[in-house]
Image (cartoon, rainbow, N blue to C red; front, side):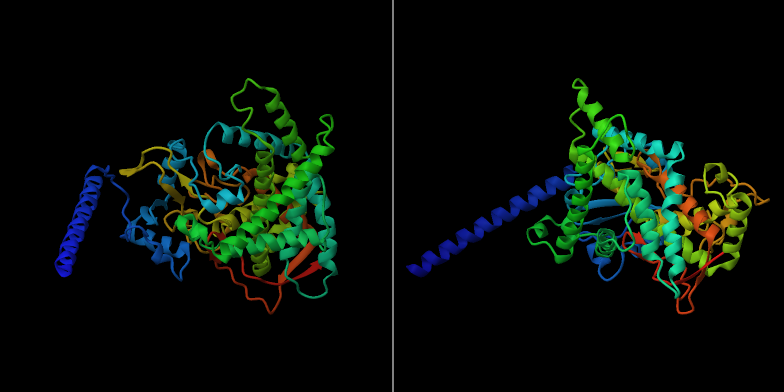
Amino acid sequence: MDETKHVEESVQISSYTQVILIVLVTTFGIMMLTKKRYKLPPGPWAVPMIGNILSFVNTSFDRNLSKWHKKYGPVFSFSIGRRRMVVINEPEALNEALVKKGSDFSGRPYLYSMSIATQGNKSILMSTYGDGWKLQRKIASHALRQYLTGRQLEERVHEVLQPIIRNMLEREEAFDPHMHLSLTVFNILLGICFGTVMELDDPEFVGLINLFDEANDLFGNGFLEDFFPPLRLYPTKKFTRTMELFGKFNQFIYSRLQEQKEKFDPENVTNLTDNIILAKQEVEADTKSPVSALFTDTHASQTLGDVFGGGVDTTRIQLGWIFLVISTRPDIKEKVQEEVDRVIGDKIPGKEHRAKLVYTEAVMLEAMRLFPVAPLGVPHETLQDTTIGDYEIPAKTTVFPNQIEILHDPNLWEDPLTFKPERFLDESGTKLVAKGQGWVPFSMGHRVCLGESLARLQILYVLAGLVQKLNFSLSKDSCPDLKCNQDGLVNKPKKYKLIVTSR
């Protein structure tokens, strides 16, 4: 009797299982039949639920994208988890997406890591496209223009370079210029943002530069927590440590903002923070404006973090590449010095000299082309269904502008992996020529880098100011490695040592 009952229960359970399976299969079938089909760009086959994540085991993000570019063409797609991604590898398609259809492609993908790092996506870099973002960017752009229209920037660069030059000359042996170049950019932006400076041995400066360096090393290919939500319950040590570093940086910026607010004088606006505080007060005073509540202290702090943190990290790395080049290539260094001597003499490098520093600026442009600091830029997200060429791109697709593939494309640049400043000069070598659509180290369109003009002026003034007073050569124990050193999202030169002497 018991055995018969057991058999009946087993049959019943089996029937229930069959019913459940039929319902699940039917539901899945209906979903697949009713799901809108898109003519997506080609790409590698993806494993259901996990996508192409296994392709990135033991290899870097950029290497896979380069491999897939060769296989699938100028626009291709892949996925990580359930997130669809499209990569653009040629300038015409990038221009179509980010310029001609800029509003369609101006979103930012939600990344759990960046949401924490930017305190709820309140930075200009990561906030979604809309009225709040437009207000935030407008405030920052207006504040930055104050330093690009007058002589404040060149005076700040000159002030910062004097102790750097003295310190370099005090080094009797070859040394790694990383901290000196970092302090140069750090103090320029510290002055612009907060009106202060730090010394090379200041523990706060050393701590912040180490923070930037560690965060860059940890970030690598990104975080699994961004694509597989269950992992957020038990985050990796890498994720936890990186978020801790972002938290420390946010606290540094926020405390500086609060200090500036306490001594703020609307009749004596002297730095970027003062400009942002003033703009915030004006926005708050207009209570009828629909965006009056969209610029909080956190937004102000994150805006300063965008300008200061983003500016320090990218500019110091780019300068590291430039000084590696001129120390490895005496012919380039001598041409830059000859031009600086002829155009500037003993004066402070300034705006009145820029139009004639054509070779020096060409060296800077070529370094940005050959050694882009952010090879993949910042990912975009489509805000609605749209297209690139004949391909259909669904809403909420993550879009990567593969800038390094464009900047190294042999169809756009002759002998693309050779450092040739002359490619940016006319035949006479006396005028800069148009850079063309292929020069995209700052991206393009609605979300083009906010700090492009500031970064380019900083680098030009620092380069001119240092070669004006110093000679640079690579130490004998340093390998002149002029190959890109991209590990994930950042491309930085391998460590090297310089010998510096007075001119």
